[in-house]
Length: 91
Image (cartoon, rainbow, N blue to C red; front, side, top):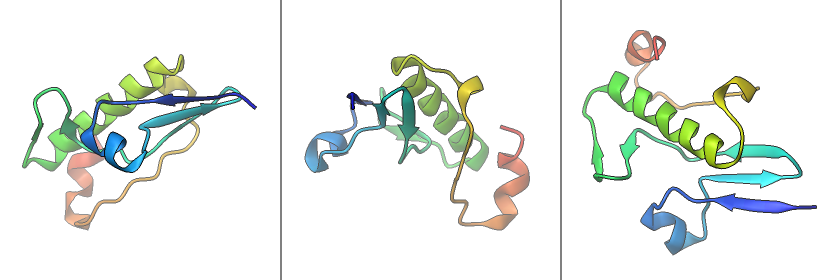
């Protein structure tokens, strides 16, 4: 079984041995991705902007793994305030 870890550069990956994505035998698993801009250390107060950034972060991890968003078969996310759903559903 082959395994490749994909890192985003987050300090937490080093501290707790976490990887943004893991590729195992051609399967890519992406986890723990949020709307954080890793290059600048910023996160928007706007939930739609956070959702858009989270998807960019997922896309970057998939690209590094040799995959793309078109290959995604399942998405699970946590949205603490149900009233924010309309804003994030457009992302």
